[in-house]
Length: 284
Ligand SMILES: [Zn+2]
Figure 1 (cartoon, rainbow, N blue to C red):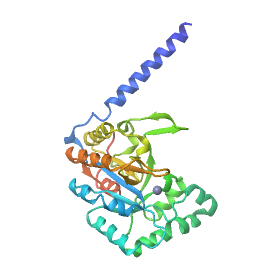
Figure 2 (cartoon, rainbow, N blue to C red; figure 1 turned 180 degrees about the horizontal axis):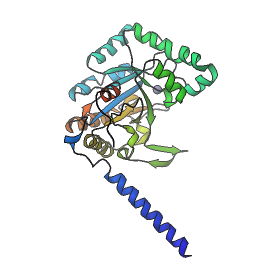
Figure 3 (tube, rainbow, N blue to C red; figure 1 turned 30 degrees about the vertical axis):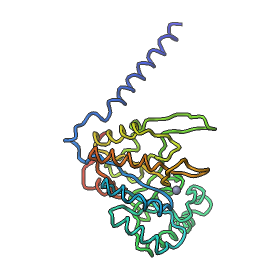
Figure 4 (cartoon, helix red, strand yellow; figure 1 turned 60 degrees about the vertical axis):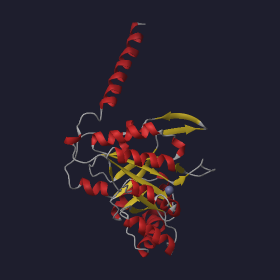
């Protein structure tokens, strides 16, 4: 009986120590010692070019630079080309998000490396280049990839590959967990020249509160890291069936907070590019 009683006490101690460590992490450095200015790297996926363009004034208001990952299954119309060019001239980055928005694991197992390249990568990149864009960053369609897919993409010349992170998961409508984003170390870029990264979705289905995003931004400022976020379609109302998107009001709040906290806005390709100029930072 005694042993049974002791074991849970030890476990509680261990949990408390871990919790204290988690709570204190990020408070161990002052801004003066940081090698990079804390910031935020926001990206947007798929093909909502008209809708993203509507956000241009709010990006300008806060001096925000972001990355648009374009799924490009056909030639880019002249109208859309101009919109993307305007966004690029504003300082935003145009990245690539596949030709057919396929499942990389399945494509590789069914068609092999050459089939993956000729189906998912080459046609879309050709359309992008024809329109005058030369993406150096890639977001995995559906957040699906393998080590082999990563190797192929890096060999094709992409300098950063972005995957998907979620702070909340549900199963059959029941919430399994909800994490405050500040406790998710992998969504912070530490300027360690990492080429495979995770960005936290800000779409409505993961229910990030304004307070949570503010705390997550403060952590980026205090640790000299870049908080990586992404979303799909800008929404002014509840999403429809099968619609992925984020609240425009939430994005506006996030940009305003980042601005008032004096955070740096990074595009995705800037993250490894700026890392290369600096020695590796040790801790987050
Ligand atoms: Zn997508």
